[in-house]
Image 1 (cartoon, rainbow, N blue to C red):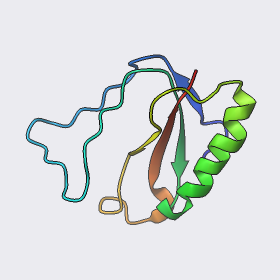
Image 2 (image 1 turned 180 degrees about the vertical axis):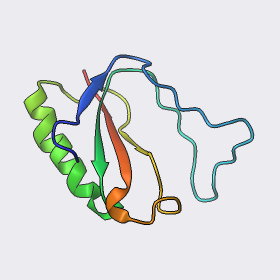
Image 3 (image 1 turned 90 degrees about the vertical axis):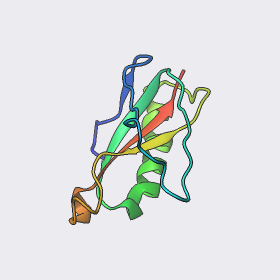
Image 4 (image 1 turned 120 degrees about the horizontal axis):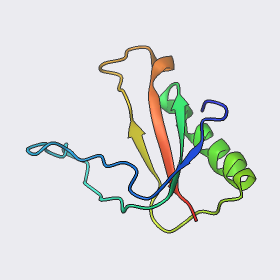
Length: 100
């Protein structure tokens, strides 16, 4: 997680919709995330380090920010993937948590 990269977003600041005709890959399911206020941080590095990045985000940044976890679900957005970026150190994952 980049230092200082956590930020908050106003409601409905972003919409990520699949193109019509996009199929959900086998073994995965679609879940709609409601509009709302989210704090997001970008992790740059291997997926294997995401657990540690989430722990720092939720255990350090969130308490220091004065925000509380809100209703809803936390989620990740994979901004690139190993098929397009073979260098694991350059993988980018946005982590988002609902806040109040």
